[in-house]
Every structure is written in C-alpha cells, then in structure tokens.
Length: 327
Ligand SMILES: C[S@@+](CC[C@H](N)C(=O)[O-])C[C@H]1O[C@@H](n2cnc3c(N)ncnc32)[C@H](O)[C@@H]1O
Image 1 (cartoon, rainbow, N blue to C red):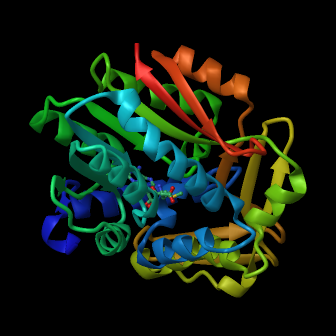
Image 2: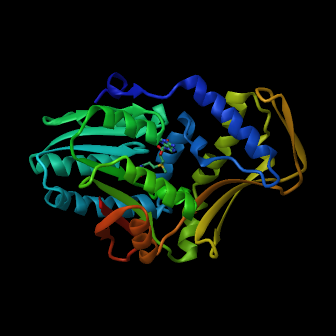
Image 3: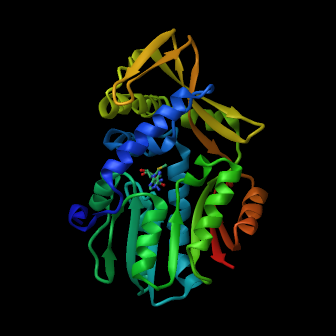
C-alpha cells in the first residue's frame, strides 16, 4: 500500500521543531539532565527501532506478536460489530496492526484503519507492511496521539478499537500513565474498546539483555538522540564522548536508559545559542520502560474509567495484551 498517498500530516512541522528545541533546552538545563523518549523517532531512530524489534534479545515484540496472533481470531467475536474503526496510537512499522486488521477482515467486518504516528518514516514503513484488501480503508495520520484521536472523532461516529501496543504505556511513569489513559477514555464513547500492551515484571537478566542487546542496536538508538540534536538543532555532540547505559530500578519497577558523558565536556547547540557543560560520568536520562504486575494493570484499568474484558497472555506470562471497554 502506498502510504505516502494516504498519510496526512496533522501536526505543524515548524511548531514541532520549536517544541523539540524548547524541550531540549529545558531538559539539558535541568539539574538532572533529561531528554524525552518521544524524540527517538526521527527517520534513523524509526529504522533502528524496527531493527531492535527483530533482534533475538528483544523478547517484547515476538512475545506480543504471538499473543496478538491468537487474540486476532477472538477479538471480532468479543467486539461484535459489522464495521469498525481501528485507531492505533504510535503504530510503528505496522506488523502487529496487520494481524489485528486481518482478524477483523477474515470475520467479515469492514475496517477503517487509522494508524497515528509522529514519525513519517514509521508511517512509510507501515505503508509497505499493510496490504491492500477489500473492505479495508487506511487513513494514516502523522502527528501526536491526541491530535490523531481528535481528527478521527471529528470524522467518524463508528465503534472504535484503539490499539496502544509495544508497551508504549511503559514510557510514562505511573501517574502520567494514569492521566494518559483517563484522557484516552474521555476521548471515546461507552462501548468502545482499547487493547493495550503491557510488559510484565520479570527476571532482571532478561530485561537488561533486551535493553542492552548484543547487536548494540539499543545503544545506537539511544545515541541517535544526540545525533538528531546535531542534525536538527546544530549541536556539536561528540557521540564517542557518551555511553549507553540501561539499568533496572526495582523500587520503581522500571528499566531506565541513560546516556553518560564519559569525560568532562562542553556542547554547543546553535539553535539554542547555548553551551551545556557535562561533568565526567554525568547522566542524561532518556527513557523509562515501566513494567507491570497483573494487579497494577487491574488497578490502572479501574482508575482510568475502563472495565476489564480480557487479558491475552503468553504461556510464561511475560506480556499482557489487555482488552478494556469504556465503562
Ligand atoms: C516503541 S514504538 C512502538 C511501535 C509499535 N506500536 C510496536 O509495538 O512495535 C513507539 C512508536 O510510537 C511513536 N510515538 C512516540 N510518541 C508519540 C506521540 N506522542 N504521538 C504519536 N506517535 C508517537 C513512535 O514514532 C514509534 O513509532
């Protein structure tokens, strides 16, 4: 499917660039330096992320894919509609979307698929993955989650299934996650459903391996954030002066990713007209990947205005795909 013809840019590029600059300024001026994981996904980052999902150390994608393969047969029966809007937040390369969409088409439903992603590269990759089929219409939206949701709601009153896969929810801390899901719930109608991917708490060795893979893809993905600042904001980060570091924080129940300055250095970013000082081994926090217990998920569902319908899981309970209905 040629997504370039179907995808629509719904956010203003210039505004987005200004936001990137503002966020980098705020993050690197903080006492505890940080950068938002939202900015991982430029063209290079989206390609690197696809490569990560195919790496053997990254158990998340293959586990969730197998769960969705089974769930895709059952979802149409649970949702029981003739035509449905499938809205996907942060759709990525579309491999998981294809499974879900196919399940509904096989069950004889008409499907309007709205993948939403801030990365046009991801949308392009999705366009290569999603097959043209009768009864399927695809409207790719390049922009932020809630701008995309608003766009769909202004144009369709059909029953919706919102997909939020890949444990993207884990990038929010516990309270941000709850706020996000409440807001999502308030954008939907009673009887709409969401299917959310949750990575479960598990053996720490397995977690560390996934975020420090033997192919060094996660390292390159993390460092690309600095390369992006160099490219788009005229920074002069020396990538050899920074090291990828990922660790599990058992108190928070989260993987944490950092870039550590391996020596004292100064970095100038011309779009900000600012120089930033890094002490030796000073960290920049770049990502949280929160992990969940089944009871965390139950509580989150309850607190954000949904009713649990079913948890689809793998045999070893490493990952849940949780189906909730708007209460
Ligand atoms: C971790 S990847 C997951 C991709 C896919 N859902 C999967 O499960 O493999 C996150 C995706 O969400 C997109 N994304 C991140 N923040 C976003 C935002 N605020 N609005 C829209 N898309 C976003 C990224 O571009 C990326 O493609």
